[in-house]
Figure 1 (spheres, rainbow, N blue to C red):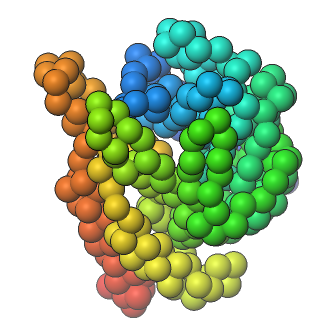
Figure 2: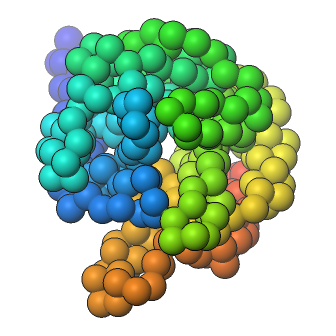
Length: 290
């Protein structure tokens, strides 16, 4: 009995520590930062390390990703700072169904009454509130939300004169989606890429029974992204597209837009490919060599 009690106590302590670490990480990613115009009618309205993008139109606005559940108040405050209202969001889009990118989507959909569109695979994940994820299982749940429609690969979403294209780029999740659009600013047309996450944090890449095609999907997604024309490079976490360094650079010289970064986009893809290959090689090593 004492042994059982000790075991249960140990499990409780480990779970509490893991929860504390998770909460600390979420808080670190969710620090407020000043919103800003990226280019034309595209704005960054997210938190310090989890992105949310607002595309404004005369008929209402489009929001891509919600961040964490705790990010919603930051998004609302950021919209107000820019002179926009949360209630004027008419369309909600997502990158993928993880808690740090769609954790607040249920609240946003309820408050704005906006239409929510998603990849069919991610649609199911959203309705399950993140449970049953191939990598994290039920570890990181969020408030379930039901999309109003499912998107096809390379389907264009048109609203208020804006046109966005959904590119299915699976790997990080089975329905991970990259968004592209073209925005004209100062007489120049910019190809904008909001790149999907390409990391594989703790993922089983070799002989994964829950996702047998994971490596092939990652490789195909990286190749697909490389073929996209890119002027403005954006992504879902600050470190992937150098958010803070670029904000600082723009503050020093407002005449230059550091988010025009096609070279950085290619570096992101090469780094992602190298990291993936490193993980594959590590997982292929015999246990004695790990």
